[in-house]
Length: 262
Image 1 (cartoon, helix red, strand yellow):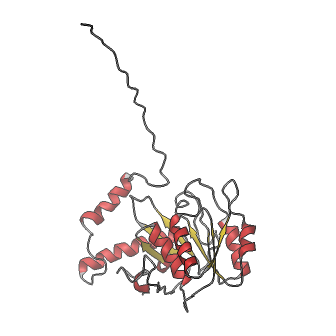
Image 2 (spheres, rainbow, N blue to C red; image 1 turned 135 degrees about the vertical axis):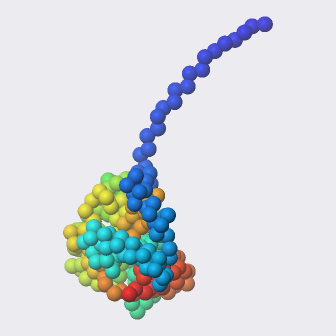
Image 3 (cartoon, rainbow, N blue to C red; image 1 turned 60 degrees about the vertical axis):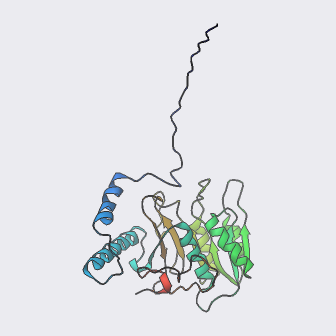
């Protein structure tokens, strides 16, 4: 009988993770800071007992720190569970704000995140007029296209700060200026998730006004998200029964739950 021998060489290449814009490992300093809230300060921050009040104080301290980071006021910060809830809150909340718009004109870009596009498509089914702006071959929204799309009945414009797939940085400051010069009552919503930590997201520098919505998020594994609304005292009620997430479906600390704040 013949004996056959052979040598197998397997070249295992070291893989390099390049998707940090989507999710990141937890930094040691973040892990250390969060340990206290996992092991010691874990009580219900809505509770009126001593431990609950301690948890609420920690929450409000975080709110103040985030507000300082973006040049906003603490009461303008709204904590949410993530990107989808944050963008849904801003879009559906604006659509049914105040007297309750049953129709109107809203604008977004064709390459927005699904958590923005899906609410726009849903509102389109409900009777809202929607303009989906095309982007250039390089992935940019032309501010002049925004100007041309604005109408007397426009109530909302939603343009992201940095695209989550190709990384293009949109001229949100210029777009905001165009919108407010046309009609200061139009609300400008910006998904700034990919900009946080890399670009200046100061509300003053980017001309976001007290009526606008901005969404930011840290790495999904590090901390949850926060919306900051540049309007003190506004009450948002997501009245449409099919809108999700709905402010009536969750209880929470002040924020947007059930449309209330202190």
